Image (tube, rainbow, N blue to C red; front, side, top):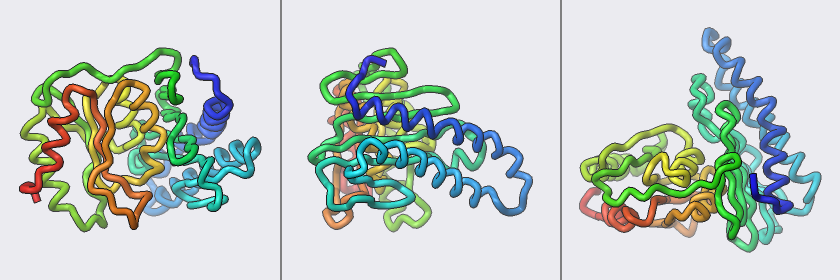
Length: 266
């Protein structure tokens, strides 16, 4: 990997250290499937254990930095200048079911801007990383978004609504509308990896409503450094850690944005 800032080096080290126990935990999932209860609690424990390893590693270097993390919430809340944004396991449902489509995601935010980040799938050993001004990489290879020219030819990915979502009808209608105007739409179950896949050109675009900031924080800088375009739409200032996101290459971005902004889908 050709990135060498102190922050990216620290994030990479934390990801690799946390991944060792996560790989062991993932290996136990198949055995847990035969139990009538327990897998959910096991995954929650794996999530918290992974998070603790990451936070311990990051705080050893910068105990004063703020942290936003999925499980533990906020640490050093008053420090909004320098913050780590952490999702220890993005794609927990996949993890729970033995599907190797999940990732550790860590972003470093400075003055409200993500400066660098890593998305690491420990099972496939794929590490997506970037820092502002220095490009985006998959392991040691530079990555770029696709050059797909038309939305009708594009492969897109989305996440769909959570079970408790109050806007399911809007999300499903939006999905149908986009699907009718694109080649194909997939749902892989990890927002972090969805962002990474747009960045490396495996898919051409990604959109999702009601996504958590920690799910996509690292992906923001990776996508931008890979030449991608990003929009946050219909934001609620009262819920700053919930995002509605659109990410794609330059060619299809405006067309996809127009479809999502159509009000007649509701």
